[in-house]
Image (tube, rainbow, N blue to C red; front, side, top):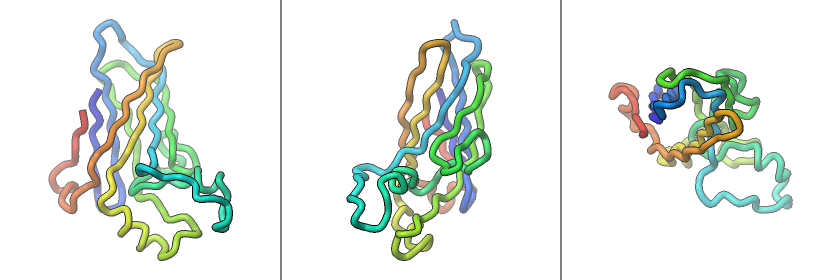
Length: 153
């Protein structure tokens, strides 16, 4: 599998391509999940938000663009139907947004997550079986857009 991430200042494109095995001609589905930054634990309800709100929040620099490419409303997961081996799945990314309770709003959020890696969980299904790849890509450098992106194998 290869995963290719390409960025402009506020958006990105994730391309996932499966390269085998030879015996498999087509996969039935793919699910991409944006994982939270490391060590994120719910601090309790005393802070004015519920555990459900906390869990829905994407704690990282990018999320999947809600409502596009099979993404859910929160930009956490996207599911797409099968493709032939060597075809690519495309997923649009956008900068995550600060939750309503985050002090400093989106400007502080972007600053806080500026150097945070993009953490993904990619699950591919075939029949009753599926397998998972966990990826952690460095955040896009200022010149990543001009350089043509980042490939994670």
